[in-house]
Image (cartoon, rainbow over the protein chains, first blue to last red):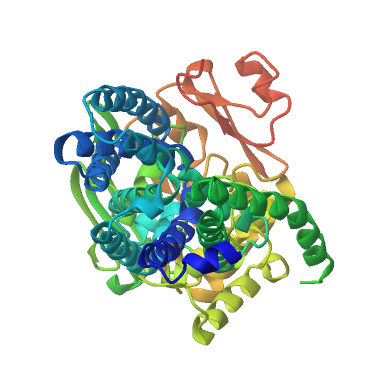
Length: 278
Length: 296
């Protein structure tokens, strides 16, 4: 980590770490809900279409981040509108995803700027993001975090037990749509670091790993945030230290490593718990 | 425990007047008149698609009547009424769902409030009491998806009771339980209504597990309905009128067996093993079953 230490006095590296922390917290917070609501494919669809949006942003305004956010929000709205019935959701996402990716390829064909800009959308380039964009990411991260802290309990109720939640007066459908919007913001944010193709490594993997440790939803959420922080910040630091490997590779690898460890150790934890009389 | 005609108006928890529910041109039930009083146990019976669950949804304020009126505890039915506890139709939880029985019960206290479900002594005590009341204390901290259907159902009842409701609505709470658990869950609901004096509306396709507890039966068939004590409603003449075809009700070992011709949709428990034939119903069944309409 000596290499990373050398760069940490540089503003670009400091900004990257700050953004990484916020992205990890946002992803860690939404992850358990993505898993509970079985929305892994929705996350994937949203991020793929953030790519289309980013491509459009590049071509039209040379601003991929705004484009990605626009694309993700459009997708969230369309998923929300089309998936009145839950079973239709995945096929609806698949349909939009395929068409959207095609559009993204078409749009990139019209882009004649910096050739790496396109790869950066797909695989992330946290060190290449401008100061203004970092400020935007920080703002989005704070909004997502506050939204998730406020929504936490009713969203959990609506996700686990929608029928009773509805009877208890919760607006279950509206909560689902608000969550899709929060998801769109988070996905756009995470895509800056790991790229649109690898968003799942921060939005799902830490939560999936955390679930192996505890049935307590608050503990799972705390662990999910912790795992996302280790993978994301660790990946950025490793990326600073390495001259050849992109940070997104480290982020996805760390995230996957945590998941493997959780899978291996989870059953042991479970057995130890089972031995304690309730 | 049957509702006494002399009980005051204040005891009426649910009141439906000239209530009708239609989906498009299909009439589920119409001109329904129903009063459910405090401490009363009402069973709602009828074939699949008769609108039993929809009746609960109307009382919950989740579904609107096509015409007529519905009042709960003296005010028009509305969602989020804390005087109403609800046990929905059973839906299995995924095994790895990170939720404990304790969390499910707690939703009944403050699941609708924004924020994080942080520890609170008052809430913790209320949840513990509800868990103890249904005998679920020993598995309250296990992942809910790993529990048996009977255990999950006890937790759902604890969730419905934790807010001390005056009215308990149960939608097929015995579905997919074995007979031992059916009896235990039925007894639990009956005990709780006596202890708390709350009214119970219990949707079921089989009256036998709750026959000892039921004060009145509401029987819904094809837009028609009948209400009264089990003896009034569960006899051949009444059910023949409802089904519009000849139906007999037999008493076998303290259980009621409804025997009908093929087109009533009345069936017996071995429906998956035998061809549907009215005569076979005489052999075995100790329970009443209704075949889903339009089954392939």
